[in-house]
Image 1: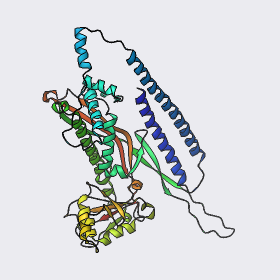
Image 2: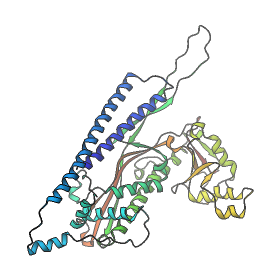
Image 3: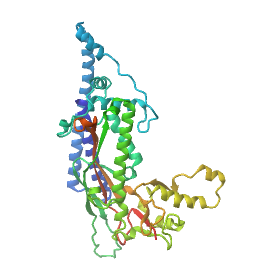
Length: 449
C-alpha cells in the first residue's frame, strides 16, 4: 500500500515540477524582465507544495521499509502448520515452486527473460486469478497497483511495473510523435500552457524624445487529456501456456497499436472523431493559413523519385534559426529510400564499399525520423506534403495524464473460452505552432509540385 502511495506522490511531484518549469520558462522568455508578484507567489506556493510532497514521499518510503522488516520477523516467528492429512496435502501445493517457463523464441519486447517472466506472472496471478502465481508475485516484490474507478466488477487490475515500463519504452521507439514532440506531464484532465507570441522592441531614440512602450505578449495552448483504448480477446489456452511469451506478445502488440494511433493523430489527423478531433501537422500546415512554412518542389517534381536536392535545401533554408538546433527530417520509409537515399547514392565520390556499407539515417547534416503515417506512395502524390523538416518539440505537445493500464473481463466471452483484455491510456496531442502566411514556424513542409 505504501509503495503505491509513493508512486502516486511521485507522479504528483513530477506535475508540480513541470508547472514550476513552465513558470520559469515564461519568465526567461520575457527578455529579462523581473517576475510579477503573482508569478513569484505562484512559484512560492509550488515550492512549498513540492517540499510537502517530498516529506510525504520520504515518510511512505520509511513505512515501506518498516513493513518489509516486520514481514521478515513474522515469517521467522510463524509456527509450523499442524501435520493433519488435509493440511499436508494443501501444504504440498503451497510450497510447490512455480517452474521457470522457457520462451519459445527470442524476446521482441522485453530486455530480459526475467522481466518478461515477472510481468507474465503478474498477468497470471492478478488478471487470471491464479493463487499460486499471485503468491509468487508477493514473495518476489511484484505488486499490483490500486484499482481505478468502478472497474473492480471486471476483475482486472492495473498493469505491472515490468510491463508498463516496456510498453512505454516501445511506444517511444516505434512512435515518432511521442518521442519528438514536447512531453508535458498533466496534473489534471485539462491544462493550459502559456505561449510567448511577441516580445519587447528596441527602438532608436532621439535626445529628449519619449520612448514608445512595448510589451511581452502571451496566449494559451489548451491540453485536454483523451482516452485511447485497445480491446482484445485472448484464448485462455494461450494464457495457460508460456508466461514469458504471453507477456512479450502483449507488450509488443499494445505498444505498436498505441504508437500507431499517436503517430496517425500527430501527423495525419483530420479533425474527426477518429483522431479525437485533433488535426495533424501535415494536414494543418497545408490548410492555407501557414503558407510561409511550406516549400513547393520544382515543376515536374511530383513524386519521391523526381524530387531533387534543391527541393530539400530550400526547406532547410526556410526554417528559422531558432528551430535548427533540434531540427530533424520526418518522412515515410519509402520516401527516405526513393528520395533521400537515392540522392545520396547518386552523389559523386561513392565507392562500392560506400554502397555496400549503407548510409546513416541522416540527410544534409540532420537526423532522419521514419514516420509510417506520412505519404509513402511512389506515384499519384501530386500536391501532397512529402516530408517535414524542423523542431517538432516547438511545434507540438504530447501531454501525459495517465500511464498505460490493462484490465480484463473473464466472463464476457466465456462460451468461447476467451478472456477480454482492455488497455487504456490518457494523453493529449496538440499541434500549436506552425507559423502563418508571413512568418515561417518551427516546422517546414515540403510539398510535391
